[in-house]
Image (cartoon, rainbow, N blue to C red; front, side):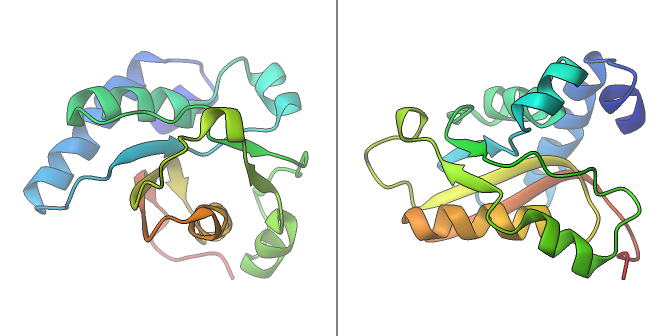
Length: 155
């Protein structure tokens, strides 16, 4: 289903995945965040793909959980290569300083509990780098909500 969303442009899959994510969070009694933040794509990749799968997931999650979506709070500042096939170390290096806060899209008040939304977590490099950016901006807790996680991380 994730492949259909990400590479097959089956945007309807985002709604089903978001529902499953929300159901799981409720079942685990996870505290809801103050807002959801999708992982941003660089404009070049967004132009090629035509949409951001993380925004699609986050839009549905925000609606289901009745929380704000900070769609434009962050920006990918560098056009990083695809991480498919990269080791954990290569991924960390690839993403170093790849994100920044976009002041026009980030609320002036400090939101203490945020949730990053992405489709797949492989090594956690993307989430860690983006979370670090949000923590530097003043968030006290950053959760990561993903539709799937690779069982054994890539070295």
